[in-house]
Image (tube, rainbow, N blue to C red):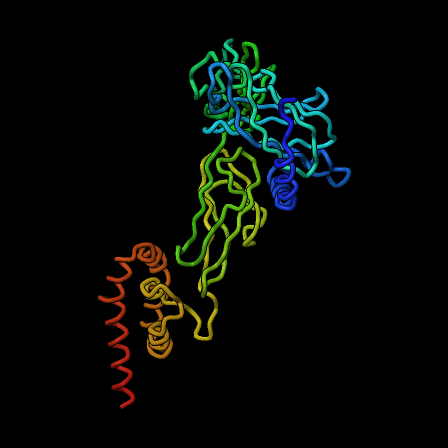
Length: 381
């Protein structure tokens, strides 16, 4: 019978049983979303994995990329996949076992196999010929006017089993929800970009949208050198009213001070890990940081930006000058207060440009530090 394996093939499969078992564990982890839920009531048995090539006999040759390959056990559907650019397939057929039959582009394959749990079965499939009938794919949108649905492959009509690339784009004020069709199958019915496997009939595929636009969330840090702000959810754009997980991580020498945004709301504006509720607009959420408390207190913002660190030894010289000289007089105290009001935005601008940092450090801050040190040495002498 076609599909029976030789004694040598059987020995090779048994010799590779351990490697196959390890492969199954990895495969089960990767496809957990589709197979593991079937066995939620208890641990699953080992499936039978089938791999090989797919070809036609007349004319002799490989089938096109994207051709649908399906596995059936006892007449019931068990698994399906599509061929790659080399006409190869990979099928994971779960238990219970029995005689496994295959269909390629809706045509019964010449090969069958006996299901064997925990095995990797090399089985090259053939069919007499690819089906000649082709069917029309029509794209639709529901409700009308809420977006666009596009056949990206763009070569309808299609043969049964061909995987067609689809894309949905929502109109302003709406967002994509799902794909629907009376027959055929989607790689992901909830992804705006996906593939649809053609059935053996004309079919209309509909992109469904709902009211409520999707808006972009961008994350920022202030000052930029103070730390990093993360969109933990990581699936921007978001629907209006959607709660997004965000997190702030302070850089060395800084501490988190709070969140800020021109619109939307925070579950906890002072918590480094919190959620942000999206407004009906694109929005930038900013994590603000401040220099961590130190025994000397306070900070020289511009110098910190120039040196790229709040712990540079030159900053100790400036702090000592501030505390021991400037703050000892009324005029000096007023100068320090004015500096703290004006310098943060300047420091923020400098910190994002390496050329400016070098320029400010070498032409401004380093000379000031040298003068302060020299003055201190003269006073000590």
